[in-house]
Each structure stands twice: as C-alpha cells, then as structure tokens.
Amino acid sequence: MKKTIRVNDKMQRGYGYELTEPAGKNFAAGFKPELAPAEMLALGVFGGRYMRDCRSEFPKSWFRKAKFHPEGVPGNSSKLNFFGVNASQPLSVWQKKGWIWKDDPRGWFQWYCRYYQGRRCEDDVRQIKRWKAMKRHIAQVRKNCRRDDPACRPRQRQALLHWAYDSRKM
Image (cartoon, rainbow, N blue to C red; front, side, top):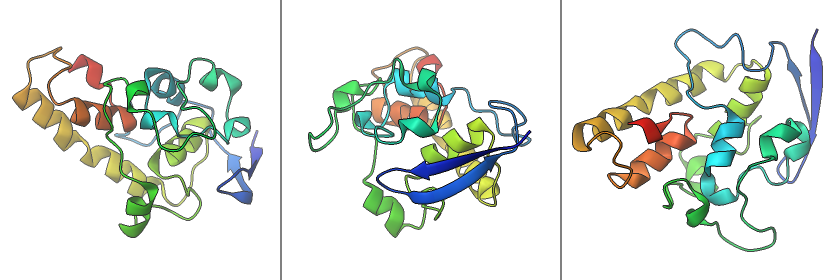
C-alpha cells in the first residue's frame, strides 16, 4: 500500500511524495549502504546541524539517539561528529556544484533518508552513482591506514560516514 508524505519544514513547503517500497528494503542493485539513517544520526554526522527541523517527516526512533547541535546557535559542532572533525562543505558549495536536486534541497542525506523510507524517484540513479563514487575514499583509507586506526584520515572517515559507509571498521 502506498503512503503519501507531506513536507512542510524550513527548506521545503508543500512538497509531497509517495512511499512505494517497504522501509529499508528493495534497494537498487549494487546499492548497499552499511548504515541506516538512524545509525548515522546516532554516530554523529554533519556537525549535528542536519534534519533538526524535519523530524516529523521521519520515524521518531531515528532521533532518539541523534546528536544535534543546539537550536539557535550558529555553526555546527564538529565535536558531535564520530571522528570529531568537520568533513562537510556548506550547502552553498553543493548548490554551486549542481549536486542538489530540486526535490531534496538538503542534498544526498535527505535523498537517502527518503529512499530508505521507500520513496523512489527520478534522481535515484544519479544519487546511487554519487554514493558508489565514494568508494575511492575507502581505497585511500585502506591503502594509507592500519586497520582500526581511527586517528588515521579522520576527515575522510567522517565523510564516508556521511555517505552511509561504516568507516569505523576500516
């Protein structure tokens, strides 16, 4: 049974989409994220700035252990990130580079959260291609770091967490 989601948050008003697949299932061939959105939020990603105002769109369980930067305080909290470093570029950079699709104004993670919940859309192929391209960072971590050495390449490891790769295990 299809379910329609309506979105009204700080970045998107009057947007709606349908969930056509069961949550966490029926992903495209070759798309095998290692972390679910709730796990990512609990580990600490995006300096705690991401998704604070759009919680009603997603399951409450995703946010129980999420690490969030305080509301009303400018900037982000790199200390909240699992590896304790900033590995993000500002949204303005993503927009300038054309990485933002109109229906997901927050970028890849928003797309992934919606995909994980069961939305399928015309941007899926592009976003999955971008996710696969992050594997080059896995190769660099494995080539240059001893296994289980989180102090080696922490920015790269944090960036991989942002893309649902579990870089704690590399």
